[in-house]
Length: 359
Image (cartoon, rainbow, N blue to C red; front, side, top):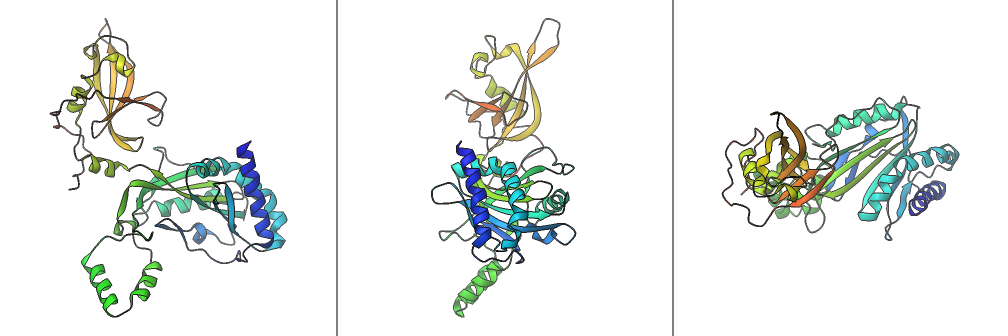
């Protein structure tokens, strides 16, 4: 019931603002999206007469935590044509908006009135842009996104850009930028310099990263609409997780670590882990926001063959063990290791993926 109420609120706010909103023209081009320090190009560079599509609303939670419409087109003549498609896009993507609104802030851009079937093509071009080196987003799922269907969604993610006390994105300190900033300050041109910086989107690699938060972009499309949602979530990407750990767990270390537990402690039958064979999985994978080493546990039997009894993931800092309970690494249960973990775990023979820790 709460979810239906929120969806109705979103639809109603969109229609009311479209009838007499803030006077923002639907023909005005929006070049960038900005969310708490992270700025990316907008999808609008891929919109044209052939694709159709126009921004009708910008959605975000209001102070009470419920969804609200902040901006929308003031062209009242389009109300009837957007009424049905607005409801369709909100219904298709409302679960994401609803779930996000309950836990954190988000910002959504609602595009309607596409030519039939064009949103999937536009979404594909937009994802390709966002996955480029300058923007550096990547798909959250290990599976490649499919744009063959007229209705679908894809989520992209990267480590968030760090911000200063004023909420402005933090650039990496370089000799050039430092000298330019000093020169601008001496000449009294600080305000002009800041305005110039705001108008230029630097490559993602030129900014400091927030090692505790990830920036997400979700793209949902229907045959005639597209919704772009920006938000943030706790966690670290693969490289950051390894760097924060400062050490790299090898498979030898993983085997030694697994020998400190009993089968019962990790959900297996038997009296000792010596009854099982441990095999390495496909290196490190991301689990619950941490880089974890994959370990397959096989049971030995009388005929000398092995059967897979479980898939486990050990965090790179050796603090946490996860047991896979579903078909993917996203479906896991957490198991705490005993407090008496050996301090001299083997670290030789790391996998091919290795990044030097930060100091």
